[in-house]
Every structure is written in C-alpha cells, then in structure tokens.
Image (cartoon, rainbow, N blue to C red):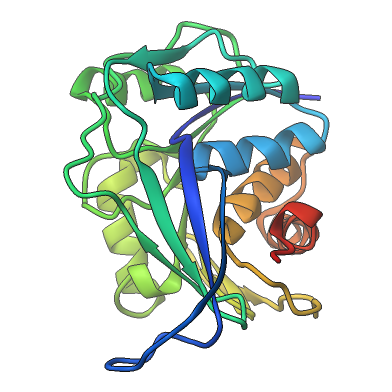
Length: 269
C-alpha cells in the first residue's frame, strides 16, 4: 500500500438522464435527475482507496450543509481529510447531461471561483497526483520537492513539474513528437511519460524516444462515462506504484476504469 496525495476537486454533481443524445435544435426529455458526489479528486481517490492505498485529499469544499455532509462522507469512505479546507459560500451543482449511450456533457456553474491552493501539506507520500486548476505559484514550485508526481494535462499551458502527464487525446494537438514537445514545456525536465487516452481506441504512451500503443480491453456498455479518465488515472497510479512499466500500467488502468464505471453508483435509473 502506498500513501498518495491527491490534489483535485470534490464537486456535487446533478446528473440529468436524457432520453436521447444531444442534437442541435432538438427537444429532449429528462428521464430522471440524481444528485451525487463527484469531481476529479474524488473519483481518482475512490479508485485508489479501492486498490488499497492511503489517500490524502487536498481540496476545498464550501462551508454549508452540502459541503459539510460531503466532508463527512469522505471521512466515512476512508479519505484522509486533514487538508480539506471549508471556504465561505454555497455549494453549486455541476450539471452533467448523460445520454442513453453513456456519453456526458458537463456544464460547470457560472462564476464558480474556488480559492487557489496556496501550498501543499509537508507530508511524506509516495506520490502526488495533481488535477486542480487553482494552484498558486508557490504550490506548483513545491511539486519539485516530491519524488514522484503524476498530473492531469492542464487545459491551460501552465507549468506542472511532473514525471507523468495524462491527457485525453482530444486535448493534445499534433502527432506524437509535437505532443511530447508541448508536454515537455509544461512538465519541464522531469517528464518521463505522456499518456494519451482516446475512449475505446488504443492508449498512446509517448516518451522522449518513441511512442507505443496499448489496446483497450473490450468492456461492456456502461450507463454513464462520468469519471472515466479520473478512474483511469487512479488505476495508472496504482500500477506504477506497484512497479509496472508504462504499457502494463495503461492496460491495468483501463481495467480499473471499466470496473469502476460498471459499479452500481454509475448504473443510472
């Protein structure tokens, strides 16, 4: 078991189960709505907890009834919540539209502005996973102090000194060498591996020297793909913590994501 710091969001999601895929100018019906806990930090942390790791979650919640209930649930599930901050405000819902094929559209609440994470806790961990937009320059510099850092590829090209960057292929432009160059500017000299996921298409593993493709194992249909990339990240972190190479880690991560997406909490109405 490894001790892993997960820096990421913990959200309250409102799921809208649609009767058909989104199409411009069409009229849709909502079969049901459901409110549940979500966010990149939460989903990745859940996967790691299920795999037997200790998870220190660094995040912020709003100091209202919803936020405090969320904090209690995190404690109940086994997260280390010593470094979760309660901030003034009202918890907004992240609206997630899910069609019958499991594809989701995320609508973040307008004007939501969580305070930046000013610093990372000085704790002894095996690895840090970063999936948060609001990071101060000081907190980003602290990443240099940790031996192993895995980061989600930032939507905006801000510095993330990480050994591994994980991204959806649609978020990274160009062929492998171009993608590596852009990733190296973000992660600097620490970068060892760029992992590019692409739905059920092969995962591309890019290094300084070459790139390889890893086939995604067949999986049954799922009702909701929300959190798929976050679960993949949890599976990948678990695998490299166990000493697997990048290709084997990607394969293991695909299997973890498939299992998590098939769990009852993703089953839908």
